[in-house]
Length: 338
Image (cartoon, rainbow, N blue to C red; front, top):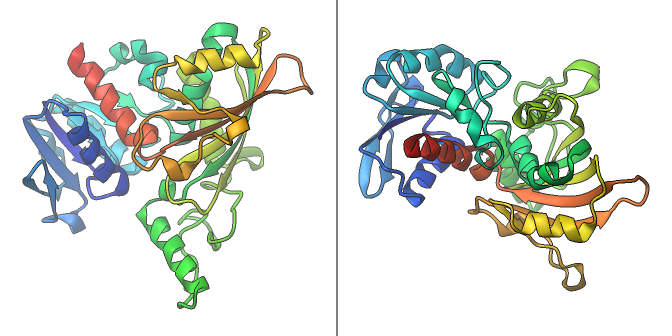
């Protein structure tokens, strides 16, 4: 395949380049594309030096698969150009996720939908991907009626600038200069807050009814992925001072009874899911353990005694990999295979 990566200099673009190498994706050419200010930057891929070019409509000529790891504005401007040039676009932005003509894909959940694409395939929001992976085996077995989810989201989900800001704030706590926060909760917000030794109950900008855009994404994207408009999702998204991996606390109400033991059995054999659930030995998922893993890790399974047919669980996944880059490469692998 000849592939292009739009937004190649960003944290997701760089992660995607690494994932292509790790998974030995069949490549004839890798074309790195970014904004004009990144022209000429060089990155190594399997011993070869790749030079970044400007993301322009003509840059997609001859490309088979175009990975978009840039903003929604860039995707809306350039994805149609890539499709007209003959490429299939796999878009990590939110630009096309809720478009009825664009499949929204987590391969372990709804790979069959990939085949109905008309040139563009959307990658879901990172928190949505991680949650969908944990819900899939339960949904298939007994149906899912309602999910209450609280997220604990790593700063890298807001870009490399947020990672550097956290490092600077920690250094300032140890005697370094403290700079004013500029990135979190989101660069576009009116006010910014320190994340070191803090949690910020806002991910993205606020939207309808006091929910953030991130929270609404989890509602609508989950329904689209499962093809179930009756599925109820009640989200609260929170940024925490963690570098990598999002964590989620899920309360899952099912349509039919499901014991904790049966839920463990289902999760233990689910593709892309790893069960880490041994409280006697304090074994449960923690984000510090998975900086380079693609699986979604589930633990702390327990019955919700306040509600019939309900379970609690703790879920951890790397939002840069399975939540973005690795999920996109898996979609591309499916395209190549078919």
